[in-house]
Image 1 (cartoon, rainbow, N blue to C red):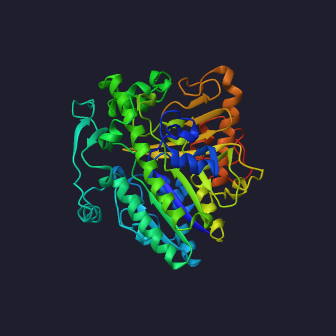
Image 2 (image 1 turned 90 degrees about the vertical axis):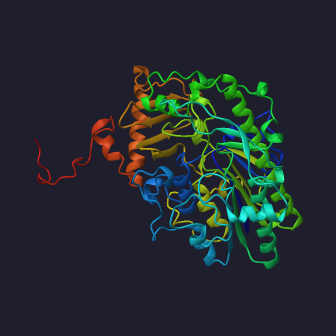
Image 3 (image 1 turned 180 degrees about the vertical axis):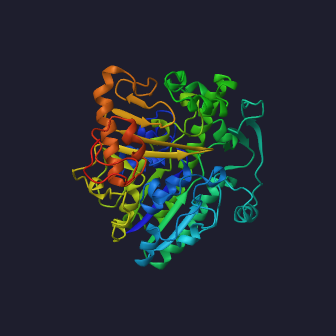
Length: 489
């Protein structure tokens, strides 16, 4: 079974037609979803690029693989996976797979995609590397103009400096965009792999729709801002929330820009999604022409979501809201029924799924579970909750999250904990953690999270042992051995 793995960066699930957006044109991804399995409750293990991508590579939770931060703002964590960590491409290579990766890597500083056996241009960093020699050669070979932008959109930082670039108008035709370039290089690799007759794993990782949104006129102006319905959480007051969220709102300069700018930013973000969808369409069409569709499983997902003004925030950060943790998840396996599933699934589950499709043992992907039983339409016993974690961005900031069918608990050791009733408050505006009527829910979720962390071996639980209602402790949280066993006070 060949495998095509399509991935975007910082992609809101609610921008796709298949997930209910009535305005954004995503016909190619919608077609993929209509012919495969669309997961409605698909989540990232952590809403930050490098750790999430490392979880996909290893099938391990971030606390286990220990690659916990993007290197650009790393504050002391590892910057590359350890040499002894299992990775799925090594297992596929042993089965004779050709391995290709075109696009964003962002998986380390010393070890690039080629270090793990992938072929393709080495495109390092978090944003489109528009000065990369291979991209410049592509422009030159096709007589296309170089990258140039105007009309930058940015707010004002708390210290009065200009804010981060959020969007700008790109003065290039679509054929010169980095997204078109990535699709072209992917098609070239597919053509080479198809000629060999050997199985392949081809990944295409788009750098977008991660901000800044740099788009040609046709996409920058594709959607009328009047179509944009502002996210209800734009009414966020941060009352009863961890103060870091208000600080991040100031960092992303939300309140320094008129609300009309926010509408335009969302409309431009939609245009970015459409541009990427069109490039994915080119890849899928060429795969059809090469006769590969019937023998190729296709994945589409993202590393995490994006705020685009929700909760008066942009980008991502230390706030475990659905906006950045829920992501698109589509899997099309030849011969399997079109369907929609509502089980909790994760980006990390893609690892075991890829391994099983390739005939490899998925067991080394220890925090991953193959989605193939769900894709086949079966009803296996499945997890009834979702566990996620965060370790920091700009500064260390540990969090753990547990959500079930209705509620979400977020533990913030240095601040207030959070509890949301997603049925009554789907936009997560009211932190109900301190509410007396939520005591039973709070206790149940805290004890369940504690148990899951202990089962995993995530040492975050040691903080929870003395601090929260986890029931009777069955070990000495000081980890000392000063008293003989059985001694009582």
